[in-house]
Each structure stands twice: as structure tokens, then as C-alpha cells.
Length: 197
Image 1 (tube, one colour):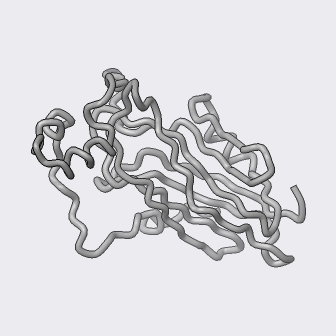
Image 2: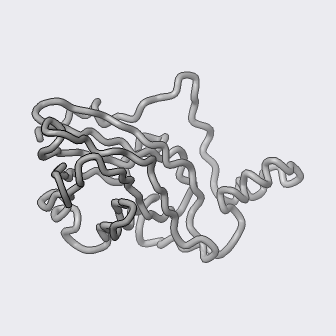
């Protein structure tokens, strides 16, 4: 697959949405302490519970720990991204997906130092020159703590193409990007749609 044009991997923007003012975790904790709905919102983000797990030597705001492929009735395929060379392996060794199978991807990740706002997964899949873009909203998350050491996001289910025209080799470029347009991970990978596993 030729590298997609940078615009192809840009997340879609919601008309009228404006990214809010940046605040520290301490500022969020002090914000409107008597406001019940704000307190519940902060709890949903995990603000104020547990001890932080942020590594002061690691400047990354979001670390993608693993990627997975779930297919009902089959063992999950998990790519451990903490292993050196794992992204190269992902690019060189395609997943095999049975035609017509329902599957979904999932990602495990951790957040550190500050709130991660509006993370999205953007993917461009290409086959025989035809490109298809999809986007999945992952959400906003506070830095991980001892109470919540990591997050997992399961994506919407998809159905693999089927039939003679659907079978074949597909190449993809994916990225995780937030509301600040900071890319946390971008990688190439591929998969084959076959008659059987």
C-alpha cells in the first residue's frame, strides 16, 4: 500500500465542537467541589482516586500497550506492543480473517501526566487502489492510578467481506490521535480475507 496522504488519516471534526481549555489534574480536582454533576463527571474520569502511575521519565501522554482482534468462538489474537519489533511484525505478518466473520478490534492503553481528551482511532484500508476510511471515538481519560492501572477499549463489531471479490489481501494504516491532534501511535498492518481460518 502506498502511504496514505496525511489528510486521509486526519480524524473527522464535529462541526461546532471546540476543544476546552487545558487544566491540570489538581485544577480539575478543585473545580466546583460542590457541583454534584461535575463531581460525577470527574469520578467517571477517575480523577481523585488512587495513586498516580505516571512515569516522570517517560514524556508520553498515552501509551498503547496492546492491540487485539476478537472473533467469537476463537482465541483472541493479541499483539503486545511492549515487545521490541512488535509493530514491524504486525506489518510483515497479516491477520487472517474468515470471509463473512464478525470481529472487533480492541486496544489496551495507559494514560499519564494529564487528561487525554477525545482520543480517536483512525484507519485507512486499501485493496487494489480502493481506500476505505473509518474512525472510532475512544474517549477522554484521566491518568491511570493504582485504582485503574490501564484502560481497554473494544471497538464496534465489523463483518469481513465475503465472496470471490471480497477475498484477498488488504493493507491498512492506523493511528491513535487526540483532540490536540497529537498522534500517540501510527502503524501499518495488513490482513487477508480467506475462505477459512
